[in-house]
Image (cartoon, rainbow over all chains, first blue to last red; front, side, top):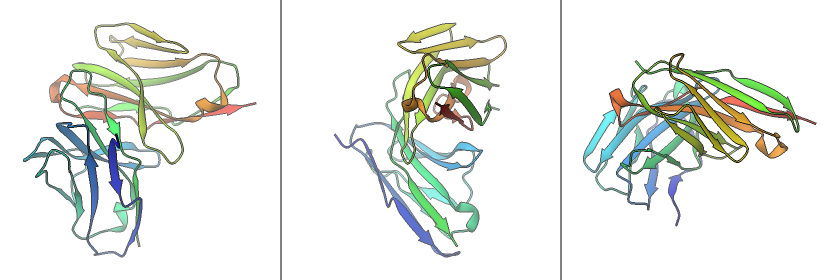
Length: 113
Length: 112
């Protein structure tokens, strides 16, 4: 059981380049989300999805796009990378059960020069 | 809106108890969580407490919830070097049942 898998683990971009962070889960979770982690600021929610075809914005959505065409996959797209998007990105999923325990991927470290 | 706050650092001596504190703003929070992040890894759920409880104990971990003051704490008894990590407080607010909001994290370091 792989859980939540994120790729790539590391990426360096130049300002203005685009890229997609991939996230896949094999637990049949309806809910998936993307967070970014910055020093002293903890985890901030970027976008989330409560099921295939449904996405919504979190606290810091600007500069990021998401889509959810399948239950398993929830890619995060940066259309025109900026240095302010240098961060560690985490994908997380959970069931719709009441306790809401999140299962996290190992993270993707992105540097924008 | 929802906001969760924690202090950034805590240093304790090995064998002592660690107490990590958290405050939150959303009085409609249904579940409150403590997650642990070890270096280079994602977060893992340590424990959670439902909003109608005051206390929850799980081996060396004790969670205390003061709903009146919107204050949550995590006590780790007999702190060991393996407890070195960042600890995140998080809330699942009833006002926005899908979102889970995290605090800034408290980095716990252990002195010999």
